[in-house]
Length: 509
Image (cartoon, rainbow, N blue to C red; front, side, top):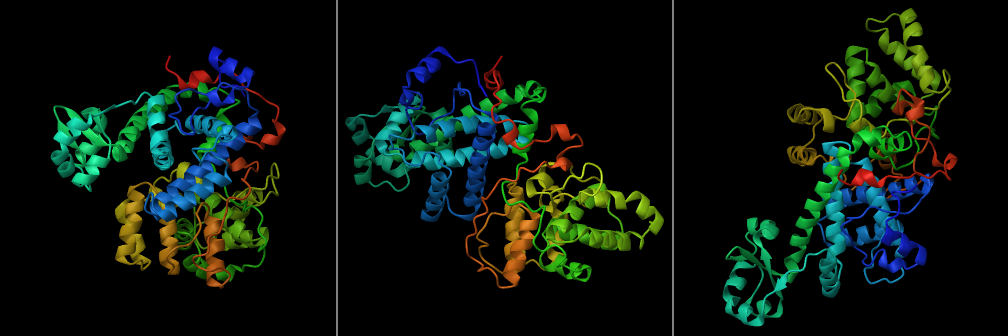
């Protein structure tokens, strides 16, 4: 895959093997798109690894205080495991820097497609950049700022002594002796607006006098502005991207991607009886499936979206085809559907989900991202994610009816307000299972069920950290689209495929 026709300088460096000049720093603003050829399989692999990293950043940002020891240790562990730059002083980290560069641009393409996706991508990239910048030495910070044209004028010792009292008073945590030790920079007020709003900086004659330790806020503000503009420009290229049959299916897959275990085949198949489902729905179903189960019991019917979401979940927890047919038929004939109508109108789709009709595709239970990002419910529907698609007041009432304590409801609603829907579901798990920390990132309703059953049966310690960064689910998941040709397929069939001319997607016309 070629991101562009190689620019003269990039091409020369690449051919000459002078790799250090391609990435002179472990950190960057991602201003220039990649120029090399990569295979479609590497394209997908790099993107999935960065997505895993950003999901970790999101989870850690809510679970821990940013820049705390726990936060830093867990994030550096993930950076090391996924082979992204984490040691700024390492000389021989070209491959890590290359991966960082290319993977950012791939996800920028995938996550420019809606305002919500852009907002999520921007927030996670900002948090990742903040951590990585904070790990630089003072000398490397200075070199990086020069590299990205953020060279600010350091004030003289005479001026600092003259303003020492004001600098100490206006800069939180700075005594007179600390002012003398710290270097201060004269920065335009527009660049220091965040510090100004927080009243953390001395202002005089339209300039902010910023201590070196706070310069990160200036750099972050600049990076946010550049990345936000870049995402908007990339979004303008959406018509071109959407018409590209090579890219669009893969990019759609990435923006809805699930990166955990495959729940299409369960070892527990046939071990769950129909009589257990009501009790399990209360103890071990995530809120989305508990909502669907209750709606089915109350109305004796679910529309297509609900049947697909709930039916595949039940398949994933172990219901056999015969059990599924019996379960749905018994419930539907209690309503307005007689046995003959069920056999003619509904049984086929159930057998289809189990791969016994049509293309014999083994359908996979929906992941959290698929439920959150696609097919929002309409009036009379009960599918979707309650944390994403419910009115906050109705969600609050539902949680109250399930005996969630007021403090827990407040925490959940705060997460929902911040659009952390999966983390809100994690908090729901913790509150309903009376644990402080579930120790894993929740990405799938069937994962919720499995972990709940482990916990209730004593098979897992509540705070044990479980890694679910296993194999990426890359089955031919036909329910992702009515047209199976638009569904991302496993990249092993296109390992040698290369694409050209993607640079235009990242630049202004």
